[in-house]
Length: 397
Ligand SMILES: *Cc1c(COP(=O)(O)O)cnc(C)c1O
Image 1 (cartoon, rainbow, N blue to C red):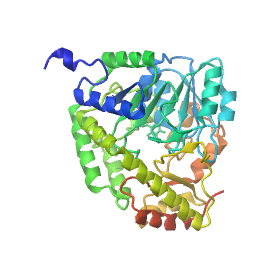
Image 2: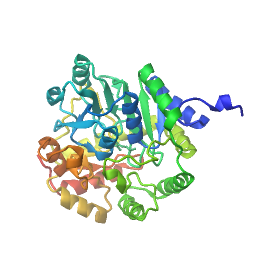
Image 3: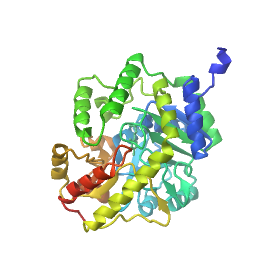
Image 4: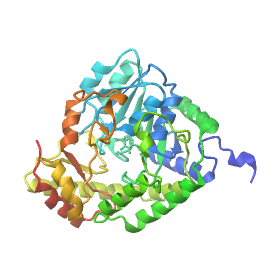
């Protein structure tokens, strides 16, 4: 093959990932997409291409994953946390206004659990101050706000395809870009600096993906997760988060693209995406109905403007600790993000500029919220069983 044909200038110089990126962008009707090893790497690429650096402030919800904050810290910028709304767990747009300073360079709108943020208000505030918005769509692939798909509101958005996202390629991330200048900048960054995953990483990822496809069903998930966690500790798994990533220091091989395996898995998942979304909507409705029958207060998002595609179904439990402890034994797939404002709990919050008490609504949510499965392998029977289980612990209000 000629060199010119292979040298497509963006991300990975292989045709399959270019095809994956093109299909992904096309599905959104967006300008361009760039694939990365993980979602957090996509965020880093976007921030770096925007020129974020020392002394800049990046505003985001105080109910997030520390992996989202790392790229901000890697670039020397400062995360500024905003509390969330209790119903959607998304950034409280009213509080957001008060956090904007002359140093604010980016607003990250994280669409939590699949609920779209109140984009009208956020975009209005951003425009008034000429600050770009990046959408965190890691938990919201396919959600719509006023009929428009999330990921197309801001200058850029990013996605994760890690194990428990809307679809998985083992690990994986994507930056979706709606601005041609920014797209050019990301493309040049990739040409200059993007590494390839090592053979060892690709090999282990392939095995993990095989295990996942063969064994992960709602009943076995807790067990498989425990095994993976154990193996990760022993250094035998390319985990989604190595222990080194709980401090704001960037690894030398952080800025990586994807492997052919991920591109192939991603292309296959895009073909199935409509079915995946339909399933999630149907199962979420069933949760709504069954929980309501049990006398639980229903979800409080604005059904006029929001059409969420939920990655998991969040509920507030009156006894989160016990529910989680008993779930594994009962064969129930109960999730727990976020366990603290900067998930996971081990995080030394102060090194990330978070002080306890900064976001009380988020802290309360972290104490109460468990999430219920919705992925393609969840059947009506799983939903019924999960509801029966979770209502035993009562609803927190
Ligand atoms: C999963 C997740 C990320 C990070 O994705 P990775 O692919 O694990 O880097 C970022 N933000 C949110 C809200 C997520 O859920």
